Amino acid sequence: MGNHHSKSTEHVCPVHSLAQDASTPLFGDTTFYEFDKILSGSCFAFSTAVVLIHMVLHATHYSVPTEQIKILRISMLIPTYSLFSFLSITYPTAHVYLQPWLEVFQANSLAAFFLLMSEFISDSHEQRDIFLATLEIRDKKSPNGVLHGIVWFRKLWVMLFQYPVVALVVAVLTDITEAAGVFCLFETKPYFAKLWLTILVKVSLTFAVMAVLSFYIQVLRKYLAHHKPMLKLVAFKLVVGLGFVQSIIFWILRDTGSLNPTSQLTYADLEMGLPSMLLCIEMVPISLLLVYAYNAGPYFIRRPRNDDSAREELQQAGVLRTYQGGFLGWKALVAILDPKETLQAILFAVKLLINKTDQAPVPLANHNPGGSQQNSYRL
Image 1 (tube, rainbow, N blue to C red):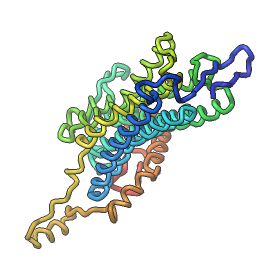
Image 2: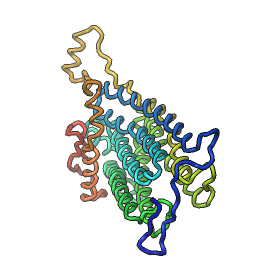
Image 3: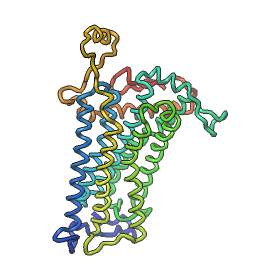
Image 4: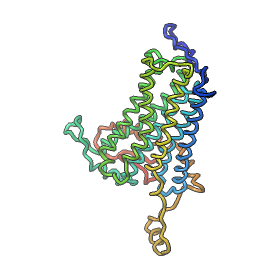
C-alpha cells in the first residue's frame, strides 16, 4: 500500500513505510506500537464487555421488540468502532480497507436511531400520521412560510436514508480504487480518488445529521422529553462526532507538516496508531454513557404479584407483555443482523423521491419493517 501510481506518470502517490516498530523504544524496551496495542486492546476489551452486557440485558428482557432492536443496533456501533480501531493499530496496512466500512456501520446505526425516535412518537402508523399532520414547520422556502408536518418528515426521511446507500457505495469504491492504485491514502489531491470519495461521504453524513437535528429540535425536544432524547442523541453523536472532529484535526496536522515520524514514532504510529488509540480510549466513557442513556430498566416486566385475576384482566386487555428474545436472548441478538428494516426504509425513501417529497400530504404506500403492522409508516 502506498506504492501506487496513477495512470498519469506525473501523478505519483507518495510512498511511506508502514513499519510497525520504531527504532527507539518509547520507554524501557517497549515501543510505541507495543504500548499502543496494550492500551488500545485494554480499552477495546472494557468498552466491548460493557456494551455486550448491556445488549444481553436488552435481549433477555426483549419486551418491546420494535424499540429494542434499534437500541441493540445503535449499541453495536461502540464495539465496532473499538474493534476496527484496534485492527488498524495491529495491522496498519489494512486501515485503508477497514475505515470506509466503519462508515457503513455508522450509517446503519444512525438510521436505527432515527427509526427509534420515530417509534417513540407512536408504534401505530395511524397515530404517527395524525401527530405529524398537526405539525406546522416554519420554512422560509415554502410559499406561505410553513411546511406541512408530513411533507417535512418525508424530506427528513430522504435526507437520512441516503446516507447508508452513499456510505456503502463509497466503501466499495474505496476498496476498488485502492486496489487499482488510484485512491492514494497519503494524498488528498484532485487526481486521486480519496479526495472525492471523502467529500461525497462527508456531505452525505452532513445531510443525515441535519435530518436528525431537525427532528430533535422540532419534535423530540418539545413532545418526547420523557424519553430523554437529548441524552440518547448525545450518547450516540459523541461516537460519530469525536471521530469526525478528530479526523479533521489530524488531517490539518498532517497537511501542515506538524506530524512527522521520529525515532520513537513511525509513520504508521502517527497515521493510524495514534488516532485509533484515541478512539479506543474515548469509547470507554462513551460506552458507560450509552448504557445509561439506553438502559434496559424500562423494558423489565413488572408482573402482578399475587393477584391472578388482575393478571387475567391484563392479558384479556392485551397489555400483558412477555419477553420475546428467546433463550438467553438469542432471537433478539440474531435479529441485529437482519438488514430488512433498513432496506425497507431505504426503499421507502426511494418511493418518496419518485413521488416527489414536496407534493401534497396524502398517504403513500406503507413502510412496514419486520412485517409488523404496528411498526409501519404511512406518510
